Length: 420
Length: 140
Image (cartoon, rainbow over all chains, first blue to last red):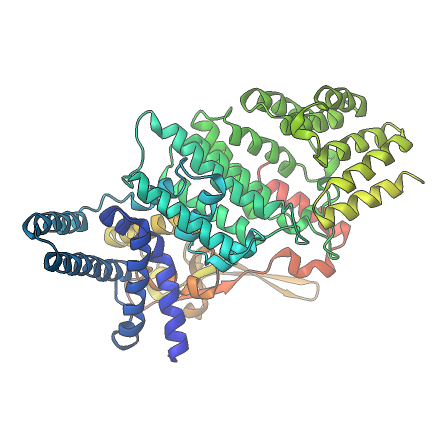
């Protein structure tokens, strides 16, 4: 094995263990930043030791023991220094010994939910959604700041700042690094699911820039979703979210044509939909429903995605079924965007006039004022109703509103098709 | 990236030797780890080749060959499908698999082609056929 091979092998092992190490250490030292440092220090020790000794049989335990030793050394060292400077050495010493003791106790206290507690900490509602997403990708996903910045089309300095601030906020709040129980749990879980779906969507429907999809974010969100479904197998909405992501991701490679242009769902080459992901998505949806979560917001959206996945030709899509699911979804999650999608579904099930009627009801909503999909949908209804001149105006308006270059050229081509 | 990890057959697996309780337990834990890491998307164990058939093609002719098949080392006794960042990660996970057999054994990791790799040969007619197949697979 060359040095380079050894380094890559060690880093691959480290990537697998990293999140669990940070999670366990954060719980011990009550400082997520220090936990990350200790994890990195353990990697450096591994990079120098393992090429000689070979990768240990239980690399996770080895790395954890190494990091913990350094944590304890660090605390002792700090205590010594403070003793030199302070008159109240005895009290301090007492404190530090307690800390060391606590860490040593925690070393043997493997309750197995460290990773889950790290996810809940990184997604704590005291942080903004953007901060939660960046911190989760960094701590749980192990993405570099550079990767996160590229994925979010943002500067590295901005992302680095966001992560530093998020860690500080967590530190100042004195969080316990625990999986929430009781009344708190549902709200905290909702916050976790929101972040995972935000990461997925950022990858799936890039709103800025030339790339239609940023597959890294989708893959990372799916991995987080699967991880969470493994750790929380009885939470219906966890399965619902996983189902939704698997089903949407099954269409990823069919969404962009050879020239990079957006291919709308009805015209996608369904042979390129990923069968394995569809299979997994349908299974996860079934699990959510069996767990009694059929009316959860994610499960309902997954059920809609499943209607598309089950149609092997666009004409076979169960639009009436989808319209019915949207009728239920808008009750659970009142949102003008969902109302707009509902209008689209009704137009497909019951004709363009039905769509126009519903879209007129919501056109005044503030959230939709500069929202490209609104005129795009109305343009489509008008086009199908044969009102081409009006349709053209709507498509052009939508093209002027969208931030995505690929989508804009698609809308402009639809506008041109109204002349024919 | 998606990979298939093959568990290569051995004399024991070809004789239909069932895994010991210890191995079942270790493998169960390992599979749980794979699931909890979010990388496992599928997998199964295969019965010995004595229960398998081969269909040999030569132009229009089709010949059915009954198992068992020779060249044990080239046979497969089971597989996983994983989604990993890269081959390094797949190797790191494969290394920590408990030895799936009583004696020496091998895993083989193979990256999967996506249908997009065949894009230039997929006509709308081919797409339609694949769509039907997928539909049946998905139980829709």
